[in-house]
Image 1: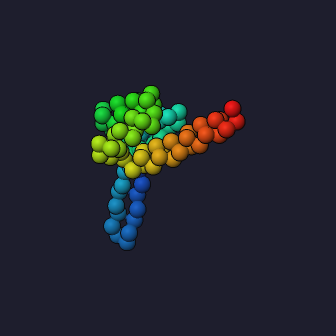
Image 2: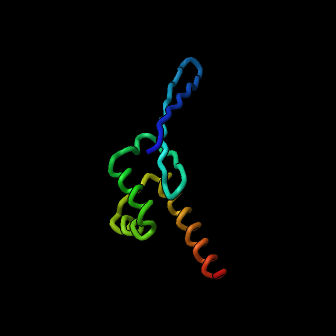
Image 3: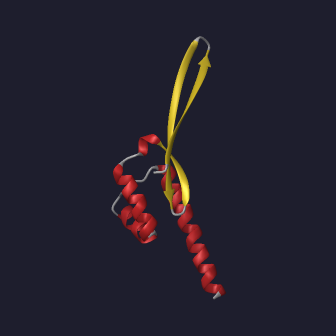
Length: 96
């Protein structure tokens, strides 16, 4: 986890005022910063992200096989990033 920041918004509907607050945390995942809702912070998630950064897709695949569910924002990012990395590897193999 890199930093924390909070945004607060106010929405007025007629005479009722509703307050909402969302807190985001930034995690460093596979060389990029990813913002997640603060409700996802836990020590296990931090450990999993760190291990994925070192071991890569095979570790991620094993977590998914064992029914670990990442926060949707993070899972979407990981799927997209692994596709990009696989594509880059294939391009490098063809070039070399």
